[in-house]
Structure formats: C-alpha cells, structure tokens
Amino acid sequence: MIHKNLLYGGGVIQANLGDAYSRKASQDIANFHQNIKLAIAAYQEALKIFTVENYPLESLKIYRQLGNLRFKQENWQLVIESYQIAIKLLEMTQSLVKTESSYQKMLSESIDMYGQIIDCYVNIGQYEQALEYVEVSRSRRLIELMMINDIDQNQEKPPEVKEYDELQQQINQLDFDASRINKMMILGSRFGIHEIESENQEKIVVLREKQQQIWQKIRSSDRVLAEQLQVTYLSFSEIRQLVKDEETAVLNFYSTINNTYIFILTQQQLSVHICQGEGVEQLQSWIHDNWFKIYVKNRSEWQNKMEVFLS
View (cartoon, rainbow, N blue to C red):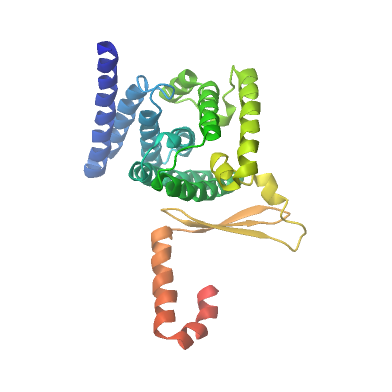
C-alpha cells in the first residue's frame, strides 16, 4: 500500500509539474515553445503511472491537457490522437460520477475537446471525419443533459442498468489496450484509436452480445433510459444517404470556440465554408446585437432588415 501511494504521489507530482509549465507557457511568451515541451514531457512521465486502465480519471485530464498543448503547437494529428483517447475516457468514466456538481465540472472541463478536434480535422482537410464528430458532439450533448437530470434527482439505477454498466467496464478494459496506448503516446507515434487491434476480440463479442440483450430489455420498458446508455449518431455514409438527388443538399452548422463551420453536402462533394474567427461567443454576440435587440426595440425595423441579416 505504501509503495502504491508513493507511486501515485509521483504521478501527481509530474501532472502538477505539467500544469505549472502549461501556466508558465501562457505567461512567459518569450519561452512559450520551451515551456510547452517541458509540460508535455512532464505529462508523458505522469502517464507512465496514470495508465488508462488503473487511473482513467487522471488519464482523462492528462490526455485532455496534452491535446490542448498540442493544439497551441498546431500539431493537428497529435491533437486528434490525444483528444480521441480523452473522449473515449470521458465516455468510460462519466458513469462513475455520483453528483450533479461533479458531473458538470467534468463536462465543463471536457466539452471543448469536441470542437477542437473538429477544428483539427478541418485544418488537415478531412471534412468527413469533421462532420462525423459534429454529429458525435451533438448526440453526446443531448445525452449529457438527460443524464444530469437523472443525477440531480439522485435516482437509483435499475438492476439491468447496473449489469449493463458492469459489462461495459469489462468491455472497456479489453477494448482499450492501456499499455499499448500509453507506450504509443509517450513515443509520439502516429496512430488512430480506431486502428488499435484488440487481442481479446472474441471475449468482447460475447460480452457485447450479452450487453445488447440487456439493452433491448431496457429499451422495451424505457426507451429514453436506453438512449442514455447507447449514444447513436449518424456516420458520414448515413448522412450522405439523406442526399436523394442532385437538387438536394444537407447543410450542417457548427460553432467551435474559434470558428463557425457550414458543412455543405451534395451528391458530388462535401465542402466547408469557414467563418474565420466567428466562434460561438462572437457569433452569439453578433446575433444578439443585430437580431434580438432590434426585434425587441422595433419589430418593423427587424422585419425590414431580415433579408439583409439572413443574406
């Protein structure tokens, strides 16, 4: 126990050192790049102790921080790799949260990952993946709002849900190859989380079949609860199927901290119009000043300016 506590303490020291260098990078502009490198090195040392298998909550924070730092470096591929792991960890660990305040804190610290991974995919021209993460982000946000309501009511989980969660934890441990992920991230290898091959696929298939049977049972009695357990979203191929003919286009709007994107999907192509610098706060402020304020003060002026505003 003493050895384990000392080991954990060493991980905390390295993570705190990474936090300190991260803050210093923001304050000491002259040594920005050096402090970023030192912060990343400290976080990677912490990950040698805080593996995703044994310390998922600590790993979540570190991978999120690694993504944030690499975003500042504009190292888009490594940002994607860090956020992919952090997002998976977020999905794995949020069921462990017992209070609304803790759940809200976890979400507030992690919500920007979705937007920034979309920024990265757009930056490297992978628009299909960007659009898929738009759908993931919206689906997750809807489910999170539903879960907050249940946490707030302090509802006891039904036995079927507890069994479902236990199976999910077993699947996560088999599917999420902790040692290989940590080793790859420490060495800075290029890889995608979907490319990691599990050595336990047969076990996972059996567990998922059993889990799906439980989910169907839950869904038959409470569809809303079932949707909270399995977040579904449209893949790019499914979105594409919505475009029935050459005269049809799917428009998808999404605002990140930095920009607003308008995805335009036709039968021929997927293109993206980028409103550079018009992130969610700037866009909301502009709509408030140029739309809502006029609507409240002068309805006729608002109607007259509607065409210009929407053009």
